Length: 428
Image (cartoon, rainbow, N blue to C red):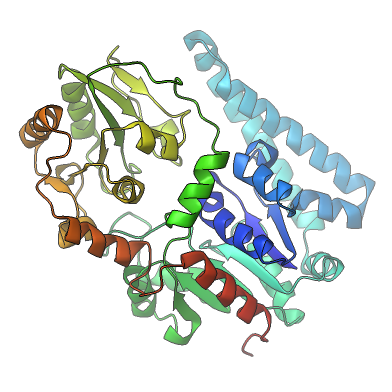
């Protein structure tokens, strides 16, 4: 069995296509949630994998099977805390949000405390070994996650004791070409993150080079491209995607614009970002939707404007399909827009990083607010006229989606690599 551990929306985004390809080949696949806060069964991709034949479960239930009533009671208490926290955060109405915020913080803290107690009492390496043996696991698949998080380190120890190989798979696509993209970034942290995995998959040469530069042995790294943005998965994802925009869309000659800001911690100028949103909202003849980063929505306050819509509830693929033009700062979401042939504007002035986008000239690089307004008004007149070349977009897509490989079938590459890795013992 191939066992995938998931925790957040983003890693599920990138691991689901790989698990699907294994299932399609007749392999046995299980997907376990590590994050008690995440609603695993509410995720459409997890439900899709379950329908395709994957064993889907909460890791907590595996430990309950081993430890019985006390463990089950503690899990039930923890789940009630986290469920209450989710309900409070999703409650509509400004006063309720204000009061609910502090109560949500309290019950969330109690849930976290419960989890820490449970982990100390029940989530030991011996129990992890029993779970792996019970499920006849051949390969453990994690995303690019620090071993200190959740029970990752515990299962890495158990896998090594049982001679089961482990692999770390991408949970995103690295586009930044500078070193200090955010506070936590650095060679030492990367080495700590990846040194305990037997094999690491990089989506592109940028990530591969960064890992090698951090001291990770090149022999442990394989570059396979982006499972999330390959055309095979984009086509399949569109078929299962829950649609949330009006169908059919409202008839209008307005230019449909979607803005995907980056995570605030990635050297983003938040004051200038807010000012840019206000300026965009003042432009006549456009419909503007903004989708904050999935890991940063709570930290981003959008300007109040009837002409600026928060699209947090709409999934990225649907927004890229709807849009006439896509705006990004450093998000790899631009890849989906470019695959779909949509005009892409890279708002370079909103952060202090450098990216592969500008180096390969694969989109319209925007240097300030005046150029942004000029570009939007030009696209209103002609949605197809952009100052970058198709061959530069193709170079970008080959680097990012195919990992600079000549093979077009990204998912087959992942499937064959994992099957081969499951068949060999890890290095001593």
